[in-house]
Image 1 (cartoon, rainbow, N blue to C red):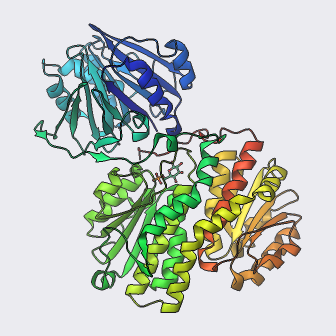
Image 2 (image 1 turned 180 degrees about the vertical axis):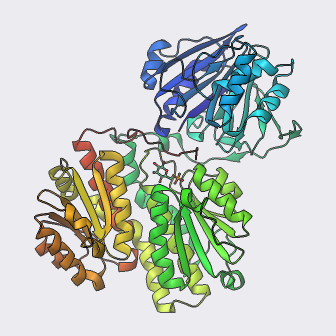
Image 3 (image 1 turned 120 degrees about the vertical axis):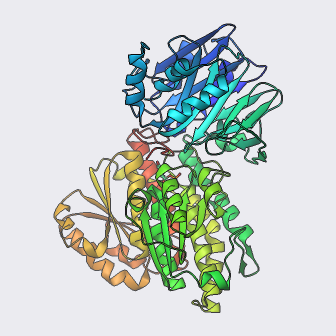
Length: 608
Ligand code: BG6
């Protein structure tokens, strides 16, 4: 996804902006650029390729000169990645320069209208219409004109803008795309993500839907959609910038894999007091927990996979129907949802457009919504009725790891709390599960303390073209995430399959050299899994088992065996996830892939 940063302060803007763009690289991009006001003019430098190309063109930030500017990393949606299509885009008269994240759906008609009035476009992006429309509608009031422009835009946008008429000001406006305002000491920032400004300030304000901000070095003023000044309450982010750095790891992904014990501890520990689960502001009690006749869990990518794991757990212990749906499917499915549905929305970034749209639809249909989110004050966190934060810290690698495992842990807490309220779990079983959930960080640490066997298997199987992940019950749910992790970062075709389903078709793909990872952590299902493993091997497929000390005998029939720490069958997905993350990481490392920024992917897709 595109990244935006803007600066108004006493320093030279270029070095601050370039550094900020580096912290936004993880969002995925193919070009970048910077625009700075230098006296009477706006100086723009932009280029296709990675940030290092922009450093080269700006003499490592020595230019452009000036203390007020904007920067952008572009993830192409309209118009090929090219220098001219990179942002910032400048109006034909050179007066306005803008950076944009989102999609202007009516850009074609706007472009036709502006072209008919003699305005010449430099490139073929949707975003450029914003700059040209500013010129076309400009009436001497910069902020007022920006409001007129946004009234003409259909679609989603986070916009940063500078103007030669007001050389000390950065403007910002957002709709459906994230934009945060960083409040520094005699300097202020706009950014798509706090990581871009965290080095300079821990105090931020989230710009609300259709709100405007006007920043100078010494002041920030906010306005609502009508241009009326509004007061905003800053919040303090306690993340340290080092958390948004690699700190000696070769990749953010590996660092974040190793941060999971701490992330799980900080997500779970503060919510367990004695043997009571407290879920922050979530108002779950005997009354409302019994008004729900079903639970919908909604997310995208790994967040959806966390929901599948949560569904299995909640159906087993809350004895309530749980649907888990992809957000992009839910929003167009005319969902059967009302005030008797509890909707759990899962999103690490809290900004995924499909998931935000699903949240809004569920609310419109009367459902009570609870968001499981990692980024504070993100759109989904702000718009849900309740929010349960995963305290995983900033997650920079595109492929989520600690984001996923903390989401699963949060779902366990919510499920167990509801089960206790509804008396659908015995006290003894409740206490067992609570204890197991509390032990997850230490068990993950045990896995991380010796990953050599996982690494060996990964390097052994790294050149295979096709990998299957199979499991039954909660192992099938866990295998979905294992397959995605491998696909995302190693570009190997991988598929998760319900082990019992393999024989109904897909087994035709199994041949000599096909690798199958079989998750066998469910003791009751071990005999069935053994027959599935045999079926794969009888077609000369290679099987690597992931088992527990209770089920590891299955390994004697397999070609390889990895054993996770002993524990409760119902919470193994957090442990198997870590094993499969490490497996995927070392396969991708062996294949020389761009592990933190896999091709074509973005950390948070803020367009539908
Ligand atoms: C994808 C990410 O773009 O979005 C995945 O690459 C993520 O890692 C998915 O699971 C959903 O993102 P989020 O922020 O809503 O959890």
